[in-house]
Image (tube, rainbow, N blue to C red; front, side):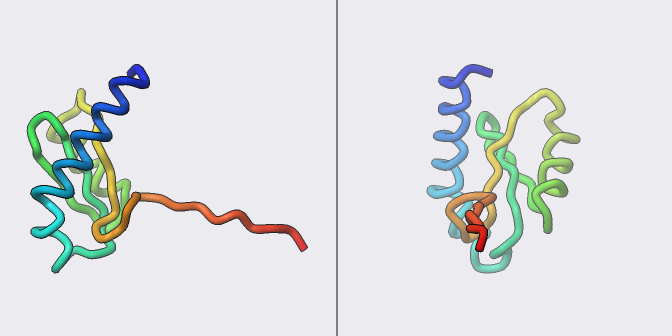
Length: 84
C-alpha cells in the first residue's frame, strides 16, 4: 500500500469515527478498540486491538482497517523512558 493509500485509509476511517461512530460508541465502549473498514463503514469492537482486528479480518479478509481506541485520539501511544 502506498503512502497516499495509507493516508486515504486513515482519513476515511477517522472521518467515519468522528462523524458517525463516536457518539454511538463512546458512552458505553470507552477504552475498547474499534476496527473500521472505511469503504463499507463496517466496524468491529474488541476489548483488545487484536480482538477488534480479528473480528474485522474474518468479515473482510482482503481489506485494511483503521484502528482506534474508543474515547482516545489514537489506538496506541508511547512514552519515552529516560534512563537515570
